[in-house]
Image 1: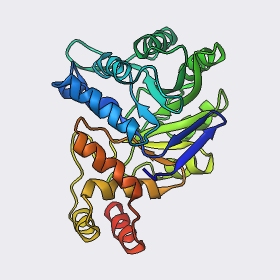
Image 2 (image 1 turned 90 degrees about the vertical axis):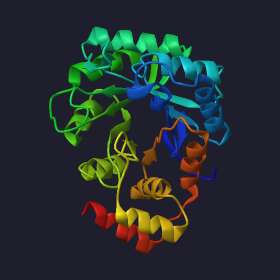
Image 3 (image 1 turned 30 degrees about the vertical axis):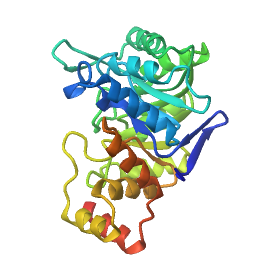
Length: 284
């Protein structure tokens, strides 16, 4: 994989093409996968293909995905960075419930450490209450709780998920922010301003649901551009995200080895100027 890397801190350099482990859980990101051996094979193949950052969380499953990551990859390669997130818990019915009290966040960090088999977490993202965007509510108390764990040596770097520029600025007054993870893709561009802000601040902007998530991207223009470039629509959508800004990173998830290889190959796809213009017009 010739994909470029991004350096976010002296001890944190990652490939811009990452892997999102969410889909390694069962349907609805709940319960075990249908084929655990396949999930392990996908993780190992991602690392073999050069991916050096994996996005995960203890609430995927819950716990299931982190335990599979540990089974597949522990002891972890020295250059592999696991990015996890806290701020929610799963109900018995699979619901996603905010868990943002300081004691909830601290417990979640310790649980991630245990289930991943680590003494320190590379990056922990705070998942806000308004995770899908649109709130300017203060996150100072929550981020401060994580910053305290960083001071204790349990976390190396901190990030945010589902935030506005105002919230990023607020967090930066408490501790450095190395990543922001928001909903953003070729057809969902509400956070264009956040993408640009992150580039200015050398903060990695990770698009979650880069391929549309549970509702895959549908676009006649995307399909036509992909056919012209002899690539899949998914590859073109990922390549567009990678060229969107200097600090854009992507974390596509899949439980298929074939789709994994296709996704990673998108890091080498160069979009010509006319294709970029056509794709830009989709979200205009």
